[in-house]
Amino acid sequence: MFCTFMEVLDTTVVNVSLPHIGGNLSASIDEVTWVLTSYLVANAIILPITGWLSNHFGRKRLLMTSVIGFTLASFLCGAAPTLGLLILFRVIQGACGGALQPLSQAVLLEAFPPEERGKAMGFWGLGIVVAPVLGPVLGGWLTDAYSWRWVFYINLPVGIISLLMVKAYVFDPSYISRKEDQGIDYWGIGMLAVWVAALQIAFDKGQELDWFSSHFINWLLVISATFIVAFLARELMADHPVVNLRIFKIRSYATGVFLMTVLGFVLYGSIVLIPIWLQTLIGYSAVTAGFTMMPRGLGSMVGMPIIGTILPRFDARKVLVVGLLLGAASTYRLSQLNLDVGYWDLFWPQFVQGFGLGCIFVPLTTISMAHVPREGMGNATSLFNLMRNLGGSVGISVLTMLNTRYQQKYTNILGSHVNATSPATQQWFASLRGLYLSTGSGPGLADRRAYGALFGMVQQQAAMRSFLDLFFIITAVFLLMIPLVAIMKKPATRPGAGAAAH
Image (cartoon, rainbow, N blue to C red; front, side, top):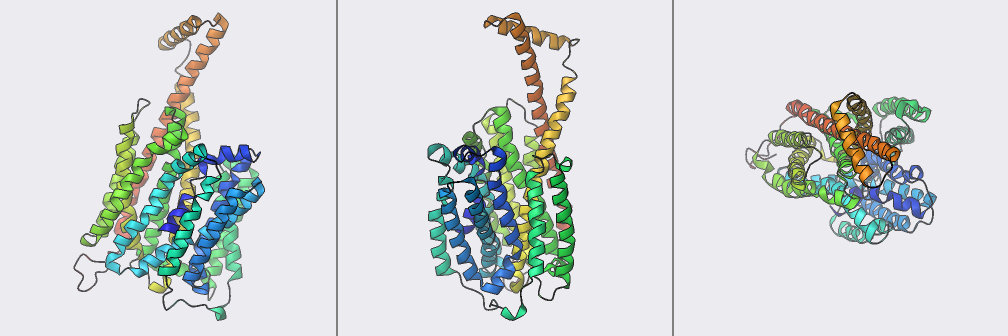
C-alpha cells in the first residue's frame, strides 16, 4: 500500500508545479512538460515486464530494489540543478516505479485466500484511486508553501517506511526462483520498449502538436503500430516470452483488462478535465480546485473498504454493475450544471463517483484475477496495470482534444447569434458600453471593451457547453461497459466458505 500510493501519487503531484519548475530552471512550458512525459514513458515500459523480472530476479529482491531506486531518484529529482538532469532522474524514478503497482498487487492477491481478496483489493485500491486525486492538492500546497523540490522530497519518508515493511513482511512464494537457463527475450524487451515509448509520447504530445498535422506524431504512431505487430508475433512464438500473452485466453481476465482500460480512460480523463473546468471557468486557484476534487477521494475512502468487506456475500458482477451505474449517474449530474455552480453541486456527484469507483475497482480486480493461476499472477497484474495506465493516457489525450474542438465549434455556433441585427446583442452592447463610459473610458475604447466583453461571454458559454458534452460522453462510456460484465465468469466458490465466497 505504501509503495503503490507513493508511485501513483507521483503521476499527478508534479502537474501543478510545472510553471514553478520551468521558472526556476529557466525552461519553457513545452520543455518542462518532458518532466511528466519522461516519467510516464519509463513507467509504461517497465510495467508489462514486471512479472518476468520478478520470476527472473525474485519478487522481494525486485520490490526492494524498486523502492530503493524510486526513493533515491526522488531525492535526486528534488536536488536537480538543471532541467536535463531532472528529466534523467525522472526516467529512473519512472522505471523503478513501474514495478511497484503490479508487484504489490500480486503480493496481496497471493497472500490472501480467494474469499478475502476483495477486502485486500478494497484497501489496496485506495492508493490507486485516491492518490491521483490528492496529487494536485498536495503538489499545489507544497509548491506554494515551500518549493517545488519538496514535491519530490516528500517521497523520502514514505519510501523508507515502505522499504522496512517490505524487508520484514514480504517473502517470495516457492515457485519463484531465478531462471538463468531459460535465457532472456532481448528482442521482446526491445520491441516492447519501442512501441510503448512511441505510443506514450504520441498521446502526451498529440494535442500540443495538433495530432496528425504533425509529422513527428505521425511517425511515432507508425513506429508504434509496426513494433506492436512485431512484438505480438514475437511473444506468441517465443518459448519463454517476456510477456505471456496467452493469459488472455482466460475470458474473465481478458474482459477485465478491457474494462480496466476503459476505466482508466474515464478516471484519468475526468481527473484532468475537472480542474481545467474549475480554473478556467469558475476562477478557482490550483489549490482550491484540488480541494474541490477531494470528495471523490473521500467517496473512494469510504466505499472501497466497505465494498471489499461485503463483497463475499454478493455476486461480484452485480456489484460491478452498481458501480458503473453510480459512475454514470455522477457524470450525468455534472453534465447538467451551469456557470452558477456551487460547492455542494460539485461535492455530491464527485462523492457518488468516488463511492462508485470502489464498487467498480474492487470486484473488477477480484473477478479478473479469480481464474489466473498463482504462478501467472505477476504477469497478469503487470498487464492489468499497464492497460489501465494506457487507457488513462488515451482518456487525457482524447478528452483534451475534444475539449479544444468543441469549444471552437460552440464559439462559432453561439457567435453566429451575436450580431448587429440581434436586439439582445444590441441591448447587451449598449449596457456594456455605458458601463465602460461611466468608468472614464473614451467612446472608442468603450466600444472596443464592450465588443471584447461580448466575445468573452461567448467564449465562456462555449467552454461550458464543451465541458458538459464531455461529461455526457463519459456517462455514455460508463453505460456501454455494463453489457460486457455479462461476459465475465462468476468467481468459483470455495467449498466450506459459503455459497457467496469467491
